[in-house]
Image 1 (cartoon, rainbow, N blue to C red):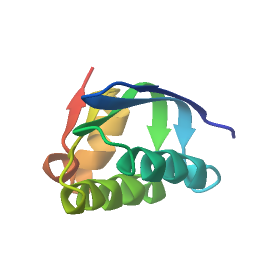
Image 2 (cartoon, rainbow, N blue to C red):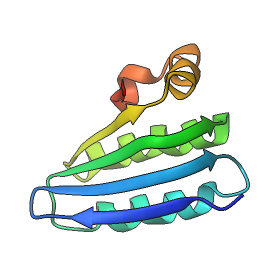
Image 3 (cartoon, rainbow, N blue to C red):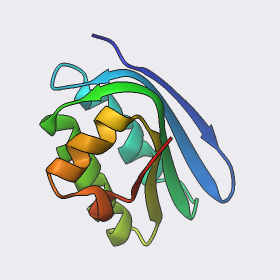
Image 4 (cartoon, helix red, strand yellow):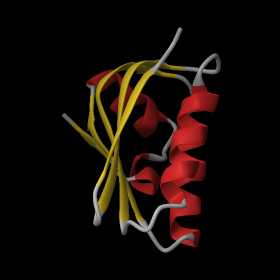
Amino acid sequence: MELGITTTPTAENYVISVAGEVDISNVAGLRDHIDLALEQPTAKITLDFSHVSYIDSTGIGVLVGAAHHAVEHQKGFEVVNAQPNVMRVAQLLGVDKEIGITGA
């Protein structure tokens, strides 16, 4: 399944809005957008997950890696507007605080 990904870069915050289901079949596209954002001269990267209905462990792994890379690049990183089932996966895996995920 294809992910819908749009970006809204500003001087302070690079926002990546994601729509669909994040899983092993499409996680490479999300990773590419995050990697591009990390190279931009913004202070923070925000992933808007208000339209993400599902995420698997592969997707969570990409978020954990992105959070670590953001620290290496001295950037803030957060995932906002996560749906309850997405929040639950992050909490069950014990990475919710690590990736800075907050619910809708």
